Length: 244
Length: 396
Image 1 (cartoon, one colour):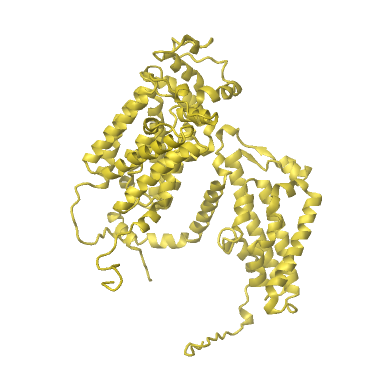
Image 2: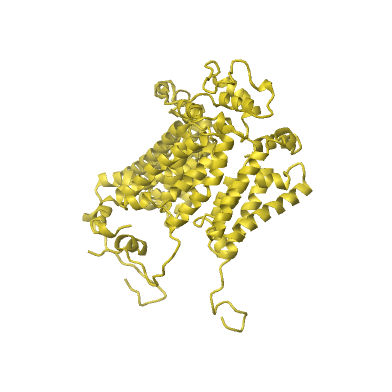
């Protein structure tokens, strides 16, 4: 790296084909260690707005997963033909096309889900997870790796969305998967469960502050898991006799 | 191995404190103990005017808070004894018990306390680190979650209520889910100037331990909520919607005396704390003056929206707020001028939200909003450091 020339800083790196991340790790990275909902904190707007019930969270999670997989695959196939200078507009056009298709499909086959998701279904196009995957991985890697990475990321986001929606619905309404029969189809009506009567629910969990509270607790649990080993090591050095 | 620890961790792990080692007469524990004792006169008044339910609420809250504090101390690997004897969480519990309805079901009190201690206090770092007042946040948690329960279980203070609200009668309502309305109607019947209409058929007003079985259906209860379950300020809000703040319809002359007594007891405790220099005098003073001023202006300009000055000062949580809540040293502003600004802001919000907000009592919301503004107030009222910030062309 040439740092003496003030006008231009060039960075030189070497490509080492033997040090490529294994495929399984590419998939698991998005699912856990670089989870978009808990670590990258991308796509917060739909994450907090739609997770008021488990069913709508599941619906948006599946739609996002579909869009991110397809867009990553197509961008990765076309990456040789996409000019670097105009890549962002091209990505946006591709993603918007896919979102339009998914939206039309949902409107046709799952009208209840479509109406419960509202504006957040077309807004997948502005979800920064999809653009982030396109920019970070799909524009550089081969289609298989891009697809695996996108699937891991989409699944990770969908899982966080579903867990958040489930916790908020259970705390705030005392039910789980309520409305699954009408939204997802008659096969899902067996999933609807009423856990306890509404006397014991806390409405604040469904209100916007509850979304922040539950998401913060999920992130805290993820972080606690991540630094568990370090904490144990550091706690060995604590002097018990003088602690307050 | 490279171990870096923060200054805070150094203090905690190694017991290091930097010089100068001045001896403080007032430790945190003493301050907390004094505040707790100063709340006792008001607690006595509360027991006399609302009955034993308040004591149950305090005990439930205290038990929950002790469990939460112990769990956090274990997780943080702090000394269990030190965490449980710092005397700060009993104050949170007492303020919660004073603000929550006396007949609230026990699990809701547990939830509010756990929220206050775990999320609002300990998640920010524990004693001295919390941004928001834990008791007020716990109150809002319940108020937003289940305001119907709050109004249904609220008891209007009246003299000698402790004779009807005995420990066993309130325990039936709080722990075993007996409908609170029966007990409340018995209380109304026992009032000195009560009309015999209040004793409805099926209710034995003479025997406070007999609770009729046939009134347990929820529908009849919720139907009566609108008239009998609401707090005074809720009644004021309802009459405001009809175009006037008609206090006479919700508040007769003889029913206001308990509120005056309770406010005076809070003032008594507050003045004791002022003498001990725990409560900052100018903060409490500016709070009450600001409330009176804003209420007077509001009432003069829009008498249909704003309550009169005296009612603003007596009803709701104004007294406990002015003496015990905004003066919490952790969550108010850090500078001398900033504290006055904080008190005035809180007073303005209380008066404004009472007149214009959709919730009837606004103390908790105002306190939390002011707490959120406290860091900004600190920055805006920052004192000039010596030798800095003089006029242009001179020392700078």
